Length: 267
Image 1 (cartoon, rainbow, N blue to C red):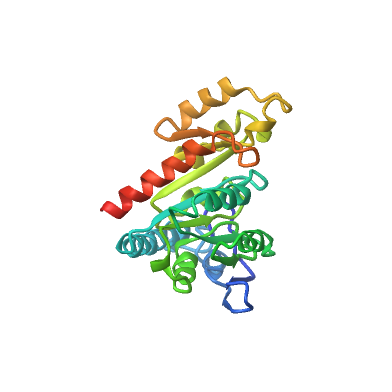
Image 2 (image 1 turned 90 degrees about the horizontal axis):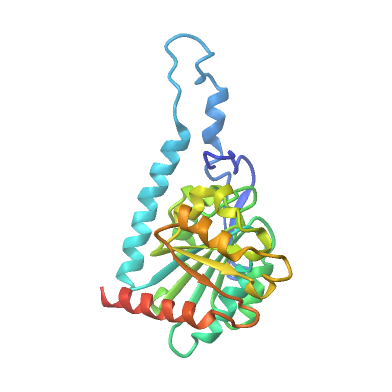
């Protein structure tokens, strides 16, 4: 459940390696918000306290995220939390990055989706180790899901762990997963004002990737305005412009990953 939309009231979270091995969590954090309808609202009598369940859940998530971070650091893993709207090119970017880095860095991926394992299957076909988290009604990954998925991965066989978050620019902003770096995608097809419409997620970014640059002219993307908007909201983030399809701009991004992984391994 997240404080923004109350997602996760029903349904299961399932983790699968694509070989029909799955772990399900029924209900998850679903009982939390129902307390508000059971006498904890201020309208229901005197002396009743209102519990900030959203804050409590986020505090618990932060504790679990820090536990994940300690584990990942002990493995000298660079961990990327990749966030974007649906259709911004996350899966293609991950696949092309993994293939280009295959001789120097070993990548593994945990994929989050509300339903289907289509993205995980695409990555698996490219020879990339993948675990799928099917979140059901939960519109974001959280630290608990990542912890359980990580138990099923051979982290010692990886240099980089990519967390492909559910396609959503709202709820993932609140949930630390224990990552080293949060990467937010802005596709040119979404328009240059996206950072202004979703400031929390873009402000939280360590890296912003402006993707599908090969389509910029076709959709009349205003590059200067987009970069100015990112400068306002994501002023501390590294910005890369690229097309995973054509390869334009990819070398700078790949070099950034090599340097970031080296820095983590040197810690």
